[in-house]
Length: 153
Image: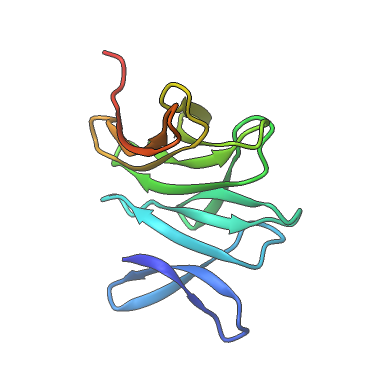
């Protein structure tokens, strides 16, 4: 199980609860707040953490190390929401235009999943082992709609 909880110093940190022990995952370098939002069957954890520059970035925690996944180009905020057993991470990030878009992070690259036509907001909330991503997006009418992104064959 993963989540976030207050530490003895009053800071909120991501944690992994495994074998009856709650492990503090810490933060990205210079950060003071983090939260874990997803875990796969291999024990890799994703979430968000503040950084030394004051931004919040998505992270991947594996082999005892928290890795900064960055943001979409020009963005200053990102958060990971899910990870599959292939290590593909999904979430959402701000963009250079100031909008928020869903992303897929795989093989060291964060890819903008875009929005429905006319929309300016999307978020990816989960991914299965086939690479199908679920989330939501606004469309021309600016109403939120459920979305399924399916990888190209």
